[in-house]
Image 1 (cartoon, rainbow, N blue to C red):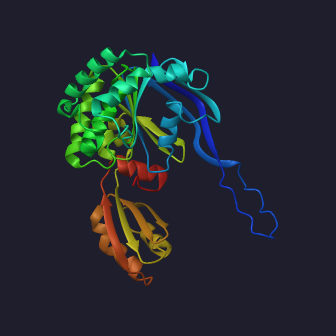
Image 2: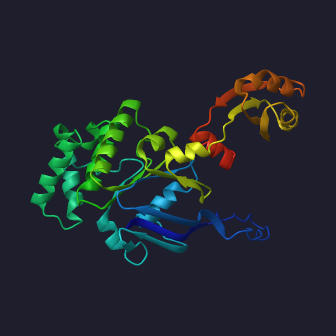
Image 3: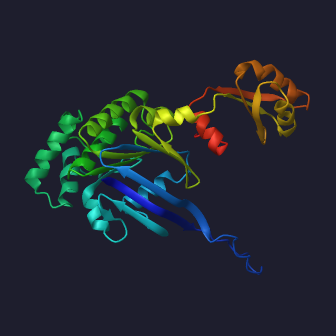
Length: 329
């Protein structure tokens, strides 16, 4: 059984209004009807899977999470979460899911345990049961000693644990996390990974959006790579890495347009692909770093000055670059 299904899912936001100058004629209508955030997306996430949505900022990850958690209305298509349609049965969806937002948003006027109890009452849980569950969750998440503390007394990592506890108070079937480790230090991030692994081991379905390659690789059973609202690839991390080109990506940033240098690079021995994006020269080659002197020479022959050099070995990131032409960050 699938915990989540989307069919031809599409979300279009209205185009920004164009201001009319006083006395000027009305500006022409925009060429499109709006900004496409999700474009005909078909997904199926089985029960109990740890599913990752990987993409750069602006790829549509947060919009997708917003739709699946009933906070963003669909333009067209269909989405079913935990057996309920997000448009026709939003209340049923909300009872069956837990949501950990990108940035902690607790009630800062309440204590930690009061936040959990207050949240649980939305789901018809008695105060006594909510208090008991709240303390159990805080104990499991390692912040039981903070139960009576105000939220502002917690570190960033502790606040994110509180958000996970809040999401679990009503025992949801599916947990959504929207870039949950953004802004956390490395120790807090690793600690949160362990918590997520424990939740997954309990058989819960987890859907997490991220733009951290390592996070997606370490945690997820399967990954959907999306960009500009489109699904570009979907498979296990191991299978996706196997699809990555065997070439190293060499990137040389010059002080001006790199098109002429790209033309020269294409003729070099061992280069499978070369492209220019403004001042950025991107070359795919099994020779890797051996090419750097020749690429620098190619740019300098056109009067360009090198500003930066970067190499990427075959990985999820090189696959993403191959699919989209740009990096995750």
